[in-house]
Length: 159
Image (cartoon, rainbow, N blue to C red; front, top):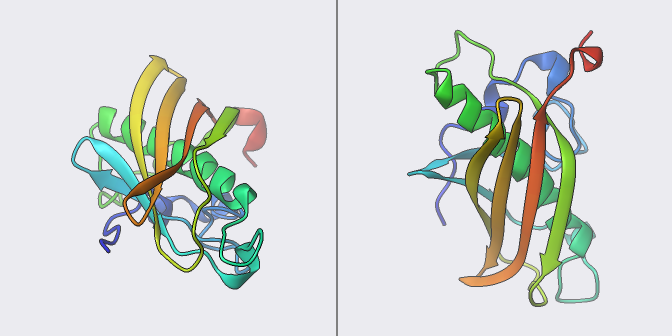
């Protein structure tokens, strides 16, 4: 299974790196990492035992969390690139996004114990809003699809 070499979450400023899903500083979180794979975005995560719905299958809330954080991370990647930067360009903080809407469709039961691969396609719908279409795969099978509308984090969220 491939890995995400340069993830946008790796360069989020410390004040904004605490998200349960993708915050690198949240010791109890998932630590999801989102990067580019050509013109699409990718996140890879292997569910842990506590992410069980029923024995052998992944809890749907985990899939929703992956789609959520993959969406906001993908929007950050896209705007950062539009501004002329990549995640490995550490001299400039990437933009942070929050979820304006999240929609998830579960396509089939997701087997537990295998890596999950989220693949996203990003679409700018407004200078401060981006739509990300995501499919989550397990063993090559699409298990969930979702859409996130991500909004640039408002100044009121900042310290």
